[in-house]
Image (cartoon, rainbow, N blue to C red):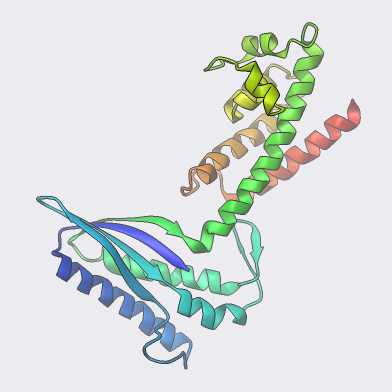
Length: 257
């Protein structure tokens, strides 16, 4: 289990390393106090790994990993279940606990006036959640694509979906019919959630404002997940609720045709 950071700072490399070691010691002391006895002294719960360092005239950038494998090995079997991004995790409350330890490490580093910025590039605790969310979004998007294709076919001339599609959305690139045929796809696979919204808006008798709002919630959350960044205006609970309502809508649609 690794958590990777880049840190921009105004410290000499030697001084920076000491700051990191002090912050890690503070976290380890907290873990050992809350979980005595832990293990052999040389196998501390969290250890730092210094990966790279580069300097500009006024500041430096250093790469640092926190290795939490000893902590995970010792404690992950002690918990039953918790929820992260709406998923139940077998590792349980240890995930919530380790997030607290990482937050303590970050706040300790940031309290130093010579630290300019801390950027987190990987957090193994959330990695599986994002992978599973990608699966959920994939299944919903494929269901929406099938529904869109059905609607466009019904309103097209002799099945010419592409011509009808061009009247509803702006296609940003040329259509390669050979590529689509080779992959058992069609023009719908060139679209994103913004396009889906535009198409659905042209069928107000089918897609109500609440359905369009749910699609927008999915779009916003999907962009955060696909780009591996923190979610903004759509929270995980809102995503799950919108996804469930949309799947109910899709089921009801097919039952009605």
